[in-house]
Length: 422
Ligand code: GAL
Image (tube, rainbow, N blue to C red):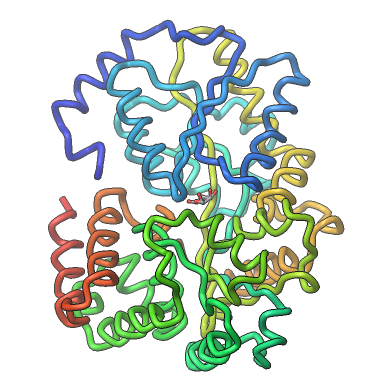
């Protein structure tokens, strides 16, 4: 659902926000809206809180539970519509532009210039952080979405290896089922369905097709035989999932892998934050690999904090301190170690990071050169929020409706992309 599809709210949001000088928060506090509430995520968010407090600013936590952030974004919209947005919010990808267009974001150019952000950040990331040429958000990390996680003991008991193709995933899954485990841990929520779907499109149809269909929204690609094929493969994955999946949170699914109840999970590397929080070691206690068939692709998801325009100088300096801290090495290292992602700036010492993070960084660089680096549709990096929401609806309805054919779903994807564009 786009904020821009609500023109009357758009006008009132703007005037109310301009009128609203005071918030309930003390001026030197920063109120930060985010959805980092799982074990690993909360550890990561705490890094920022502590760094900010060490500089004498207060952290007003505005955590809204719900993986993927849909609920957080709904809450943010209602706060903004009532003229009382938080100082900072986790806003990502093209949605930063939507908030920028409403005139609600404050610019961070002063701190960006002082800290040399233009030199520190890869252009693909810096570009997302600017609106109308000015920095309005600061990146915390780079998540990779197309990952497969596994419990090595479950794999060993079932006598299977880490799969590198979707066919191998299906046959490994069968063996894991026969050995008495859930093959693929999953949570039946629309964004999790879309996360898996995205990896299947990449793994079965490749990067060019992914870009045409889920980034450029080309109707020929969305309605093609290739899309039908990807949708069918995606739905077949249900065979590897368990009956308990409806409504299950993503971190509960990760926990099934941690506990040895399930063999695999297809999920972005915030899942690594859960393995880390459980004290497990990458490459030993758990395995990571590119989602089957997608080793030449990297669907990226950059978490970022955008700052809302404020008139109070103290509040503004607190926002600037927050923005500065986020890109400093101390935060980038500690936050990303806990979060499972890699730093947003590529110049840092990576010796404290594990083998999955090393692979992520190497693959980020390789795919950036070779053309496999693509924005994640399922995590708000590729298309505007209303289009993403319309695609989510089709994907999740298809996945959960035994009577909907892949051909029908592909047609609906074409309409979803068209209906949502303006
Ligand atoms: C993503 C977000 C991650 C992680 C995940 C699960 O959209 O970028 O930071 O929080 O959702 O909630």
